[in-house]
Amino acid sequence: MKTTLLIARHGNTFSPGDVVTRVGARTDMPLSPSGLEQGRKLGLYLREHNLLPDIVFTSALLRTKQTAEQAFAAAGIAKTININPLFNEIDYGIDENRPEAEVVARVGADALKAWDDDAVVPDGWKVDVEAIIRGWKNFGVGAARDYAGRKILVVTSNGIARFAPHLTGDFEGFRREHKLKISTGALCVFAYEANTWKVEGWNIKP
Image (cartoon, rainbow, N blue to C red):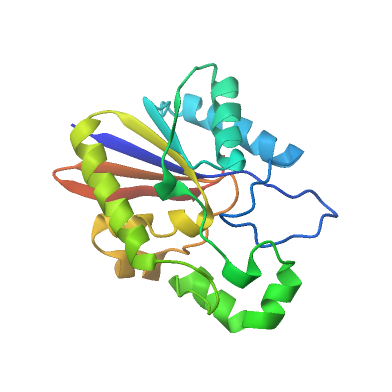
């Protein structure tokens, strides 16, 4: 019996010409018009690939809930959104909602590359990596037990989703083969069979 875990990153929150900032857990922004469209494209992709979810989880942040709502509308389904704080964005600390150019100037391009490539948290950010990893592992155990044979959709942020491959038990192996950074509106697909979570798709852009 196969259980499927679908992990989507929320859509865009900025439009062309906007000053892009580090939007984290303490900044609750709505989706931009392009972000709403990404949500709709996600829903169409799920419908076209027989991946419509049985149960849905998002963070408490508006951008994740709106992404799920747009997906449901496009797919022609109605689902209850379950809020799980595990899926809230990370806290960027002193860089929260600061323009990206200022963040680069403060922490350095190398530190941001280490975050993107290796999930190494820059100084000044408030990120409990071990807690996020434990959260994913516990969620994976619960999903396999409580939703066996079903499809589960999680809409979250890039900062949280990048740690999901710990479900496989071989995060380092995954990291060597894939970029951890996920595009806005993109989808990752995990499957649970034979007591093991495996990645079937990563950073799929509907």
